[in-house]
Image (tube, rainbow over all chains, first blue to last red; front, side):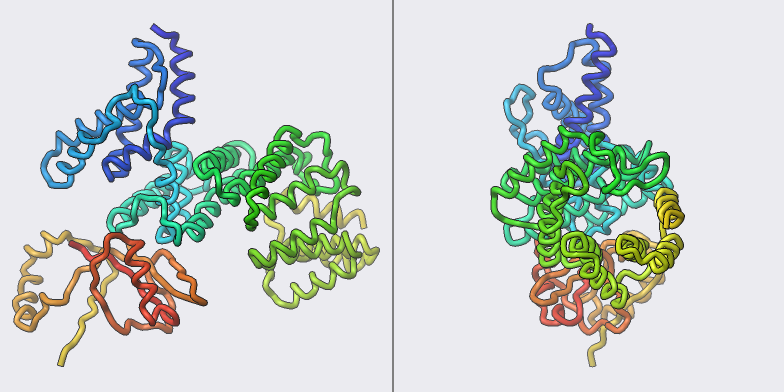
Length: 406
Length: 111
C-alpha cells in the first residue's frame, strides 16, 4: 500500500510530465484522436487505484502508455466491425513498445505539435488543440481561459479533429522544405498561449506557465533550432518582470518598475537560453525580441538602458518581421538614443500611414514623447486620444495619472 | 456540349452517403443524369470546414484554413486528383499556375 497523498502527488506529476507524450504515442498507434484521449484519461484514472495497491511504478510514463494501449485494444475489440478497427488492432498488437520495461519510448510529441499547428486548421483551433492534447488542460479549462462557452470550445475541438481525419492532415514532423514555415506556425501558437496569460490574474495566468512549459518541451525536442530557444528565452525574460507590471491596479511602465522585484533566476536562465540560441548563428524574430528583452532585464536601472543597442535590434526586427507595431517600438528606442525629435518623426509618419488607427499605444507613445520634450499642451491632447482607445482599466488609470501630472 | 454542375447548399443538412443513395429524389436525379455521364467526373465534397485554400505569392506558398473568400474570384475549373495526404495536395495545388494570382481551394472528396 502506498499513502494516498503520495499516489495523488505521483499521478499529478505524471499528468503534468507525461500526458502529452502518452497521448502522442496513442494517436500515433491508433490514428484516432478521440480514442487516444479517452484511453489516456482512463489510464490516469486506473493509476490512482493501481498505484495505491501495487506501489508507484519506476517509470510512470511507460506504465501509463502500456495501460492506455490495453484500453485501446479492449475498446477496438468491442467494435470489431469495420476494416479501420481491425487495422488499428493489428498495429497495436504488432508495435514493439508493448513492454513497459523497455528503456526508451520514442517521443512522439513533436509529431503531435506540428499536426496541432497545421496551417489548414483555423488559428483558434490550433491553440485549443495544442492545449488539450499536449498539456492535458480540459475543454472546460481551455474555454474558461479564452472566455468562451464550453460547448463552443468543444465544437472547435471536434471540428479540428474531424478536419485532421477528413482532410488528411498528416501526423508527422514536416520534411525539411516545409519545416521553416511550419515551425513559425508552431512558435506563434506557443507565444499566443503565453501572452494570453501574461497580463492576467487567476485562471488565465495558468496559460503563461503552459506556454513556457510547451516552449521548454519544444527546445528539448528540437535542440538545434535557435528560434525555439529564442522564444523560450523571450518568455522567461518577460515572465521575470511580470510581477510588478501593475501596482494597485495601475500600469507601471518599465522605467518606473522596482527592478529589485524582478526574478533574477528567470533573467539568468533567459539570458543563458538566448546565448545558446545565438551561438547557432541563425537569427530570427524571436531571438531578436529576446535580445531586446535581455537589454531591459539586465540594465541596472532605467537610465543605464542601452538604447542605441535596442534601436539597432528593432531595426533588425523590422527587416526580419516588418510590422507597424515594431516600427512604433523602434521610434521609442530612437527617441531615447538619438533625441526625442528623431523618434517623434517616425511616430508621426506611422500616424499618417493610418496603419495603426485605433491602436491606443500610438497616441500614448506620442503623448509620452511630447511630455518628455516639454510640449505639454500637445501631450495632453494625445493622452486624451489614447484614453479613448485604451482597452483595460490598468492602462486607463495609468494614462489618467499621466494626464493629471502635466 | 459538356457542362459542369456546381452543386451548392448551406450545409444545414448533411446526409450520409448511404442516406443519399436511399433517397428517391437522388435516385430519380441519378437515373436522369447517369446516361449523360454524371458518374464519370462527379464527386461529393466534404463540408466547407474541411476546406484549405492555397495561394502562391512571390514564390511563397500561403496556406489558409477555410474556403476561398475573395468575392472577385470565381470557380474557373476543377481537377480531381489522388494524393497521399493534405500536404501533398497543397504542394500540387501550389504548382497550378492559377495559384499565383487566384487561388486553389482544396476540398476532400466524400468517399
